[in-house]
Every structure is written in C-alpha cells, then in structure tokens.
Image 1 (tube, rainbow, N blue to C red):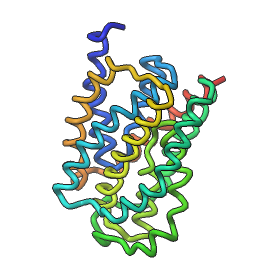
Image 2: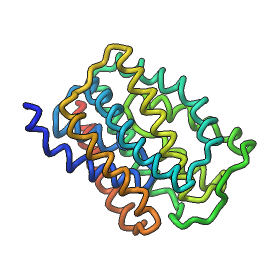
Image 3: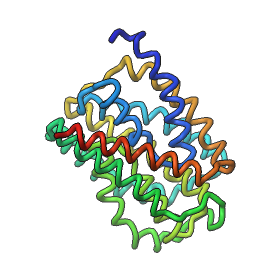
Image 4: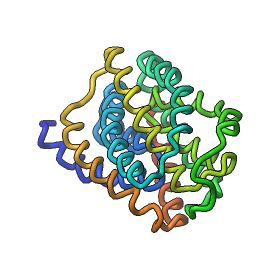
Length: 254
C-alpha cells in the first residue's frame, strides 16, 4: 500500500481511541487485531506501531484526565515502578516469538479481556475515594507483574486488569480509576515503544501518520463521555466483538 491508501486508518483510530479511553483501557487490545487481521502487518511491526500510536492517544487522554484532576499520581507512580521491568522483559520476549505463537497469545489475551468485562460488576458511577491508601496498593501490586509483561510483549494495556482491583480492592472511584489507568497506559506505551525500537523492531510510519491524529481526537472525546456512558450496552458490544476477534486470532495461529 502507498501512504495515501492507509487513509481509512484515520477514522478507525478515532473510533478505537474514543472507545478505549472512555472505559480506561489501552488501545492495543483493538489496534493489534486490526493491524494483524486487516492491514496484514507482521506481529513485530504491529507491536511497535501499536505502542507508538498508543503513546499519542493515551497522552492525549491523560492530559484531559490531569486537567479534570482524575489521576492518583502516587498510585500511578508506584504501579509504574513495578511495571517497567516487566514491560522491558515483555519487549524482549516479543522479539523471540514466532508469528503464529504471537497470534495465539494475543487471541487468548483478547478473550481474557472479554471475560474480565463479563465477570466485572464494577459500575461507572463515581462511588469511592479519589485517592487510595498506599498500604492497600502494596498488597495488590502482584497483578502488575504479569500484566506488564503482556503489555510489553503484545502492546495490550494493564488497565483491564488494574481497574477491577482499583475499584473492588482499593475503593477508588471509577473516574479516578480510569484517569489513573490512562496515565499508566501512556507511560507504559512510551517505555514499550522505546524498548522495541532499541531491540531492533521497525514500525509502519505510514500507518502511524494516519493513526496519530485519529487517536488524539478520540483521546479527547472518550474521557468526556465516561459519565454519560451506557455501561451495559457498551460492555455487551465490546465483549461480543473481542470474543469474535480472539477466536479468529487463535484460529489463524494454526
């Protein structure tokens, strides 16, 4: 494809960024299947491309959340301190996986994300605390380790794992949980992108050029509709779509 033939990435990026930033997860869970199944990028290129795009999209959403005072900076800093080694380790693993294995693992991760949405009973109402007790955060920090490895390896977000913990275990209100997770996703994307590039991965810059304006726009829209969201309808559509994509990825891996 020539650079102009990727024009359709722009509206797709707006839609993906709006959807994921409104519910606080990273875009990789939707960007990676799009790159692998629609654009037919190699897994190595898809991961690097996804992480660079997410840096822009999550950065845009994070700016909005900081302005709205929806980020618990102490909690985000602690989680990042635990996560960064895992992200770097995941980046190393990605360079040593075959294409079929990468699609298999991604398919399982996508379906796991769908399961987490089905099993989660967290509401988008804002009951809870604006900040958490860090002693409680220390006890539940173990979930960050596997989530960060997966993030570095597949460009998926840790948010779908962290938000249920922040809500049910740490009693953080939903809007602050989403804002904090978006800021974490931004930093993780930066670290992951740099790690992959330093390890010799290449990105598709034509796709990035069309996607970044889209994710920046979507990153501004998503956080603004969080409190107006129809949670049940969103979850049903999101779970249905993720399940189909996950099954297709696993099937393609054989």
